[in-house]
Each structure stands twice: as structure tokens, then as C-alpha cells.
Length: 335
Image (spheres, rainbow, N blue to C red):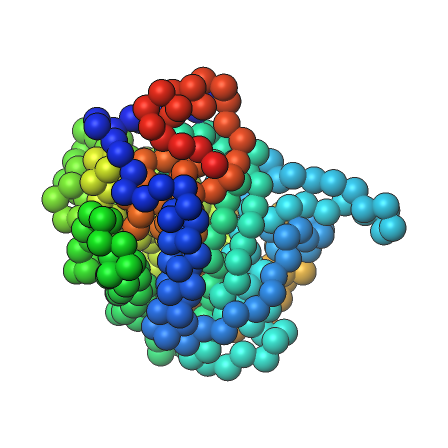
């Protein structure tokens, strides 16, 4: 059964009809702001890929992709978990230049997801990727991009509140940057999620950096696949959510692995068998562009900006009977 948090005296600012209209307005507005901030162009993207290519994102490495067979080809396909690797290849194939990038709508089925107010088996996000250079492959550029994304989110909120003044959501534009190790040092007795909540309660908007490698405690802050983000140049964008009184992750992103960091991380993760995949061979041979990229949750962002308590209020998914009962009794209308 999924876990449900019911905020005290929760009452959504928008009804069903206005919510649907606002989601459309939110998505169009944010896409415009994001493209301007990062110089992105919209492209079409796959819903499923050939598992033999190594293009699917395996997330933390334990989630099972939805697999099905194709009658005409006699081969299997897997529904994408994200497009982290596909985007990098697409930038090369489509002829993008340095400083240019792409974004696309990514839809996935994550059947092993633990469901709660923020998590659903259906995932929708803006997947984006941009070509960088050796000169811009650094922490300063990463921070600049993060600030651009946060600015686009805050601009979108300001626009929505002009249209719907009843929305009472407050976000902080100033980003607090902190590494996962610095966060652990601040709160050594807390779990990773508890550390995020403690830090975001004070700082409101943060980018937690360097996620994937083991910390001094011997555990990573969170799990990351070894073959897309460079663990020394990545992170998560989080905001404080007043409705749920907790931190909410809106984006996982980072500068992508180059030949050196991919080689090191595959070894650390005991994933050397991936070196045989076409994508990994090309990357290790230096045949793919240097990039930065990430995913920005569409339902997560809609939930945050519209002041909703549950992700099921802004997307259609499947929930267990107990979750539906709890939500119905407490004025949380699941789509």
C-alpha cells in the first residue's frame, strides 16, 4: 500500500476544471522559460528502446524495466526509465552545436516505484540535454545552469499567480549550494531524506551536489547509475514544500561523464560489462559530445506550483484502494 500524508486542514486552491487549465498554462510557460534560459529546441523522443543498445537509464540499478516483444521484429523492447543516454546520442546524430541543446517530453512506467504523495508508477518529465565544451565542463557552469532552471520555475510561478491569485505558493529564487558530504557532516545522525528536510526547512531552495559516490559514512547520499552523470559534477534541485512541510526534489541533473569519469565509475559500480554496449563504446572512444543534462518532473512541478498535496491530483495513475479511500475522506481528489 502506498503511503499518504494528509496535510492539516488541506483545501486545494483550484478545483478540477481550473487545475486542468492551469497545468496546461504551467507547462507551456515553463517550457518557454526553460528554452530561453538554456537555449533548447524541442525534439521527439522514444517511449521504448532496444535493450541491447544500453541506452535505457537503469536508475539505481535495481528497477525492472517494462519489457514486451514485437511481433514483426521478433525482438524485445523496454519502456524507458528516462532518456539520460539517448539524449546525448541524439545531440550528435541530429547535428546540434556547442551551446545548443534539446528537450523532450519523457513518459515512463516505473513499476517498482514505492508510491506516496510524491511518487507514482507513471513518470512524466522534461528531459533536456545540452552540448558543452571542455572549458565549460566545470562546477561554475553547473551552478549557472541550476540558477537558470530555478529562475524559469520561479518566473512560471509568478505568471500563474497573476492568472490565479488564490495560489498561495512561495518559492525562493536564491539557490543554496551544498555537497552531499557537507550535508552529512551537518547532520551526521540523520538519514539522507531527513538531512534534506532539515536543510531545506531553513534554506528553502537548494542544489545538493556530488550524488552517487560513497560518503564518509560508507553510503551514498542516493543511488545514481554510473554511466550518465559525473558523480563529482551532478546534483538534485530541491524546494521546500509548505503544503507537505518537507523537501521536494524537482530535478536530478548534472554534467555527464567523459571517458575518464565513465571508466572510473563503471569500475566503482562493478558494472564493467556495460563497456560492451554500443553507447558505452562510443563514449569511451570519445565519439560523443560533452554534455550537461537532466530531468525535470512535470507532475512534481505542477504539484509544487499549484499547491497540491498529492501527485495524483495532477496526473492520472493507478492507486491502491486504501490510498483512494484516505484521499477521498480528506478532500484530496485523485484524477
